[in-house]
Picture 1: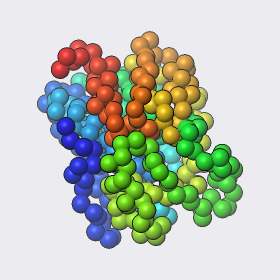
Picture 2: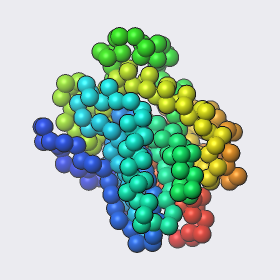
Picture 3: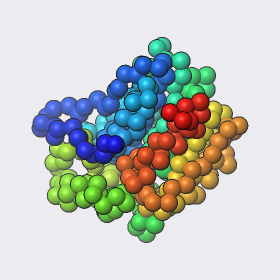
Picture 4: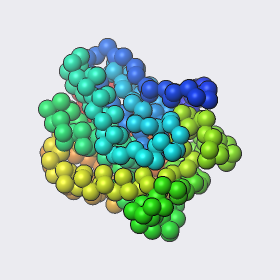
Length: 291
């Protein structure tokens, strides 16, 4: 069983464009779109990509708009541009697959729900992994709740906060790899963001996330496809309140919450990633429950 960071892509040469993401062709006529989180990277979805592809599915994990670019570029991105990245991934799959599923981590879960709302006839099911409507986990600093106020003022273009341990990871070996990069990262030179994501978070993007959440709140009641939420009880970034909020508002006839007991926020790469993958397959494709 491969580690999600066992064979990461080689460091990007200065000036080279970021890799486009992960695409693995399948053989069973079905596909899944895996959406990484805000300031994250497709690498955090590698284990899920391997798991689903080895079971015959085409896997598309797009790199969201401007991720892998300098922070000065990423910070100016609107949430609609992130959603456009997801729409393009779906359009690339639509003609050649009988069923398309979508799953996302953190903010990616919110984008997955929006896609399910926008394209109800062509999204067969959605899995929300550590969905983040509210930053209310146990490791969120008290001042984080003041940052959205800053995102509405001119200082939003100049203020960043640096990610701190445990980086959403309970697995100490993987956490140490991330820490080695984050500890030495310079805000002006972050050549390895393709592998580990951004160690700095632009305050301006909190405003975009708030706009995304506000829009999603008006659409949750229109999501009718099967909807799964997988949530770590000890998530350091977003509490179980997020999972319950979505579960209680979507109109899906078939929906469930799966709780994890030994993971933090990045459940796609953490201790129970195999359980996450298996739970997704069992829920989205119950006919493959014993595969």
